[in-house]
Length: 114
Image (tube, rainbow, N blue to C red; front, side):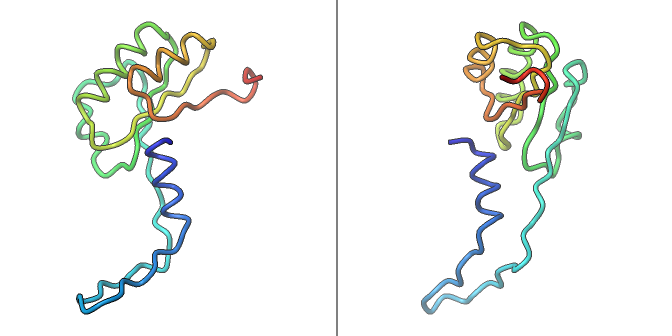
């Protein structure tokens, strides 16, 4: 399953209070919002400053060939957060390549999704 979906599911569920003699840490009753850093495919240089504090990253992919290479670089450069691709014009073969390149989740346009 997707790392980002796992994070969203954890936010949705309430965390139980720990049992035992360990000092209890207060559990937040309010869910924490998940922040997704959205990057244009052309602007991925020096991205560590752009994604600081983000829970996930989203790369807009307009050209699948260069988007696959960029996704591989992002997954290796900033491995602490899950990365996803926002596909603007892609077919099923590009989807498989982007997933293999390290994408954790995909965003499809509603108008072109069957």
